[in-house]
Image (tube, rainbow, N blue to C red; front, side, top):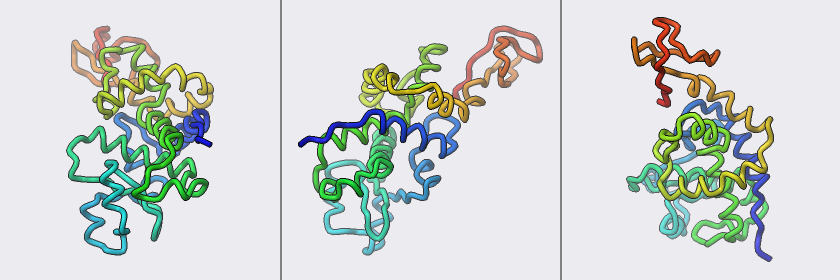
Length: 227
């Protein structure tokens, strides 16, 4: 029987992992997220220098994707560092983290061996995790509402195709999001989201009271900084 992706579980884990990682700006770095959880993420060029980390089917696994996970001698995500597309690599690593945090390797070991194709439902669930780690609904909603022209794939470090898929799934994911989960995601990003630059005097500040006015020259032409 095919595995049915658990949107609620994948979203909940993504929000919790994002909160625990203390990420506070975009784009979210999945390698830093992994490090905060004690998960190693290594480039393939480094792995090839150590035979102990080179299982027989690793080349086959990386031939199928930009990243894969090996479980011996310890769980480790390996990514193809010769790939120049940073957005695709970011997504691939986040996807592998989804498999790990959702316990796919423990619960479905026969499906998760490197070099073999996992059940499409498990892959879809890891994708749900990835999109909610890299472009969580609360952040996408806030930025799209306030500065729609800045809500684009590069801001979130995604490829265009991944960003279009993110937009297509926003409403579905939002239906599983509680107010508490949204607040937990947004809080670490508060300084990032509140930063403004005065167009008149150039002063950069955090508009925490949402006054819409520069505290220096009192100018009201403010630019929202997402840097």
